[in-house]
Length: 97
Image 1 (tube, rainbow, N blue to C red):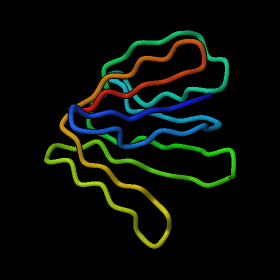
Image 2: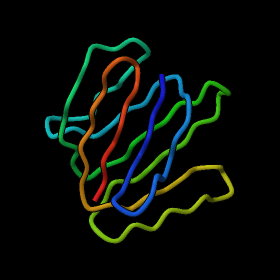
Image 3: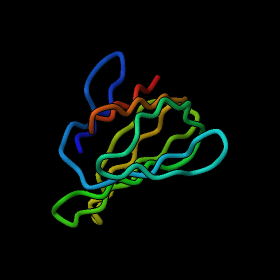
């Protein structure tokens, strides 16, 4: 599956991945390869990305400014105000404000 995380200013993440979890309005849910099409609003929480290289990234969705950074544990943290998810044909796009 392919995942992009996009803001009005830039593409923040764009890569092939194994799966990811997102904080939906009714709770966290996971998207796997060949998942059925989904459109969902994302609330404050954490996006967890599982890469095909066994690398694990986490992205925080919290109130505030967009402040991406990578720490020593190779965890990408991104603060955004809100987001929406669209998944279709094994391509997922998270639109973040």
